[in-house]
Image (cartoon, rainbow, N blue to C red; front, side, top):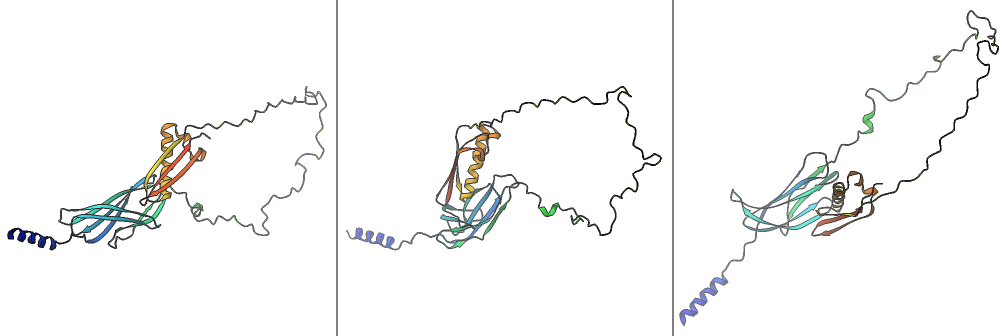
Length: 273
């Protein structure tokens, strides 16, 4: 009986002296952004976050945008690397649908650790030539000013008499001298063709097309991405001439936000005019 009590006491000592679970220490946080090359849109940019920690476990990232947008918390598991260090990573794609000039940084939730701000700048398509560049090099584009007193205009004719001829008017030929009638025949007026009726073409529309786009960091980016997806779906089903949202009917656009990300929808009937 005494030995049984001793064993229970030993277990109690072990439980009471057990160390608490280890809390991960975050040493540093980094962020990198790589955008696809080229001028065509839409195209993707890859955002990758790293957290250097002192052991295995889970961390939660929060992505902050310069415009005030926020995504997360996003869970990531720290694993041991080849060099013996522990690293937690998170990767996501950002759709570039229009010109963008912004920046992002990442935070590890609950630690107060932030990465530096990383810029994301991209342009879509060729840009028109600035007006200032259309001026001819070496020219001030100002017409020359005529000085007072310059006499470069036509001169009045001093005499109307043709050299070597008399001032008498030519004698009019009598009718029939040259075998032609003195008077010209009156031209018969032509009848104008009847004008065509001004009938307006009838607008034709196809069945409604609806698309959704998920995981956008901003509402504006989500709407633009959804519009591009609508055009792509219409081209695939009906052809290019139907893929203009400005001509579509029954058009509806909406966005909802969940866990820091936007889901946007576009719905419309494609029309030919």
